[in-house]
Amino acid sequence: ELSDEQVELYNQIIEEDEIEYKGETINTGITIVKINKLLQVVNGFIYSTPTGEAEECGECEHVVECVLKDITPAHEVCINHNPDFNNKEPKLIPLTGGTPKLDLLKQDLQDLVQTEKVIVWANYRHDLQGIKDTLDKAKISYITPETENCDRVFEESTDIRVFLGQVKQGIGITLNSATTTIYYSHVLSLEDRLQSMDRNYRIGQTKPVLIRDYIGDQSIEADIVELLHKKEEIKDIIQKKPKCLLCEYTLQCAEKKIEPYRSGCVLRQEVNDKVKKNNIRIRPIIK
Image (tube, rainbow, N blue to C red; front, side, top):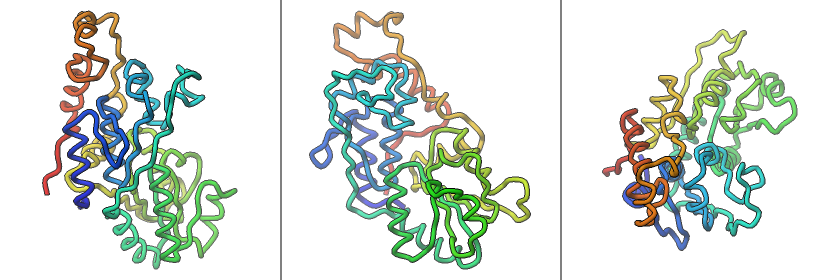
């Protein structure tokens, strides 16, 4: 169950395309950005929107790919990199009402690590830091993919009880000594989900493997996890490239100063209809 602060901010993001939160501007007019911001809030934090990002990215066909990879317009790996772009780095804003997921994780791990090893996957770097702090305080030993030969060390050590990493790092390693996998937060990439899920379900695994998904009550996470379980590629559902010059409403939008994906844009409505059709429910949480 989310905190009151999480619910309030979550609902505000759904209702508005731009909000001010703790002195920072957060733009959520593009569907993929709104979904990403909602997922951040469920995990106890939110990033501000870099200056100009909404305008720069709203017209780019790579916006979905960049959001998933945390690439901003001024970033060197941005496909349409603009060195003159006046960019302010996004600011991490922790929510002060606590993080219920961390409380749940601490409770689960205190029981699990007594008898088995556990893999914990998270999506955001901020999630990982919060989990590390929780593990350190609970004096639970863990290892991350940054450690050399991390999988061999994890498999052979009896002291290390938790393998902690980002979901996208779950490629090419074998972690059969773990029999429980916890998804603390979730990605929108089916490939990353499947690859990470297979880490402790590889050849040589002789025990049942349990997958635990942490889901914010009534939140969009429930729909995302359900689609991942059905092996639906969520990126394909929410991606639609803007082609304004080929759109019959171009002049009308120009006169009304309607930007791609913004209120009044036909493209935005098409994407929203597709999201709704695939049961991704962007709706307020009721407490």
